[in-house]
Image (cartoon, rainbow, N blue to C red; front, side):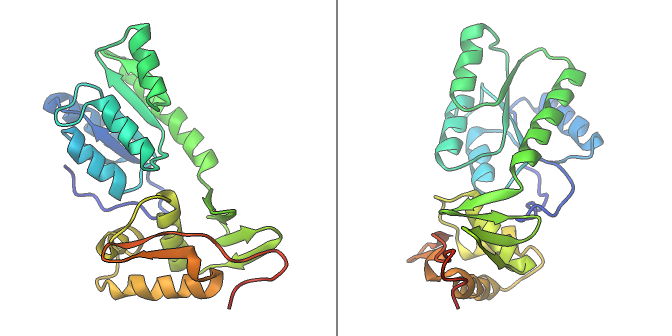
Length: 241
């Protein structure tokens, strides 16, 4: 597994981040090298368990999964990720390339399916297409009935707009990207505040978000951490103090 830092939660980073889950070491090294030549930041997992962990704890622009994985089979991995709120577009690579196999991959939640052996230029073109699609839809995240607009760093609820600081936006975006996931403080420190060292900063910005958007915007799960809640701002009442 590579050790690249996690992506900026609010989408400020310009590098495309790719999760590559492939158990064939030579193929994984070749693909990771090609992706990096394209300017992508790549995390490589050699089995389904590692791929599941990365998918649930980091954010990616595109994921490339092999089907024949040890520990957790590729389509089972994809189904688990989707059930956990993983919305990153996925391309499945597989030696299983007949129509029934392709249908199974798409039904499991993949956006694209490419059979091995494949043409490198075609693979890279498909990744670019998936990335464009992802960027077109990833500039706003739902927060209950409201939405977080990443470019303006505002939470919009009806006709009310509540401005967030950069760090507040980073934290809320991290939670909103995985609305059903419980994040430990250390996870949030890594994902939303990679430059910080003290996890107390997480509690501080949870407090700031609650002050602006209502206590329910971030739920505390006792003994485990935090997860996304709902925004209390309404069009007729303005931001919660």
